[in-house]
Image (cartoon, rainbow, N blue to C red; front, side, top):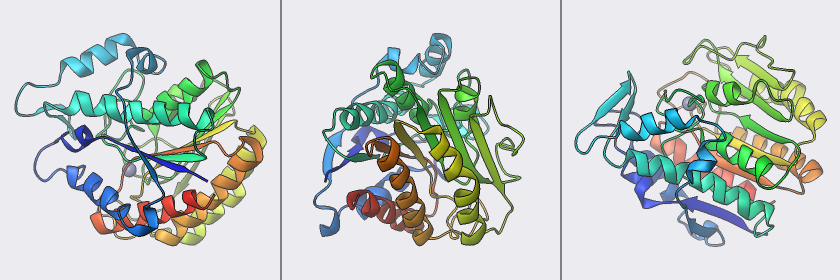
Amino acid sequence: MTTLLYSHPTCLEHDPGPHHPESPARLRAALAALDGPDFARLERREAPEAAFEDLFRVHSPRHVERTLGAVPRAGHVAIDADTVLSPASGAAALRAAGAVVAAVDAVVATEADNAFCAVRPPGHHAEPERSMGFCLFNNAAIGALRAREVHGLARVAVIDFDVHHGNGTQAAFENDARLFYASTHQYPLYPGTGASSERGVGNIVNVPLRPMSGSGPFRLAMTERILPALDAFRPELLVVSAGFDAHRDDPLAQLLLDEQDYSWVTERLLGIAARHAEGRFVATLEGGYDLAALGASVAAHVRVLMSA
Ligand SMILES: [Zn+2]
C-alpha cells in the first residue's frame, strides 16, 4: 500500500507578510510532522506547476491572468483584506494546484492508493472569478475537474472538513449534478456562506456547526448527513479539502476537534472511497493555524491514509 506525499519548496516561499496566520511556518510544521520513522514509507514527490488548461476548468482565463498579473516583483500586494501576494506567490499557487492534479493522475493510474498534498496557498475559498481568504486558485476543484475531464470519471466528490466553508468549491460545483461538495464548518464564521439551505442542484451538503461544537456534533454531522449523501452519490474519486483549523487549539475558530476526530473522519472517508472509488482518495491541505495542532493533525490524517 502506497501513500504519496506531494509538496514543493516554492510553497514555502509564498509570504503574505509578518503576523499573517497563513505563514510558511505552517507548511514547515506539517512537513516536519511527516518526517519521522513512522512516515518513512511515504513516497515523496515534487509537485509540478499546474498547466493553464487545468486552471481554466475552474477559473476563467481573465481571472488567472489578473491573479498572476497582480504578483509583485518585490514587497507585498494585498488583493483583499487578508489575501496578500509576494513575489513567489504565483509560482507557489501553480505548484499547489499542480500537486493535486499530479496526485489525481497518480491515483487514477494506480501508482498509489492515495495521496496527501502538503501545499500552500490553500484553495477552497477561491471562486471561479475571485481569489479570497488566503486562497488564489481552487486546488481541490481543479483536481476534481481534471479527474472528470481528462480521466473520464463520472462522479467526483470534494469533502471539506476545514473549519471554514469552502465557498469557492461550492461556487464551482453548485450547478453540476456530477460533482458533489459537502462541508462541515463553524457557522457563523468567515466567509459567511454554507447555510444548510444552500443545496446547489441537490449536490451540495452543508452542515454548519455552532461555535464550541466538539467531537459529538462533528461526528453526528458526518454520520447522519454527509456520509449517507456521499454514499448515495457513489463518487469515483474523493478529493478532501483537509483543513485542520477546527482543532481545539486553533486561533482562528472555536470548534473543539482533536487529532482523534481527524483520524476517525479519514477512516470513514476511506471506507466510502474503497466502496465506490476503488480507494481513489486525494487530500490537500487547506487551513490549520496552530503549528503544533496542525502538525499532530496532519500526522494523524496521513497515518490513516498509510494504513488504508
Ligand atoms: Zn479554514
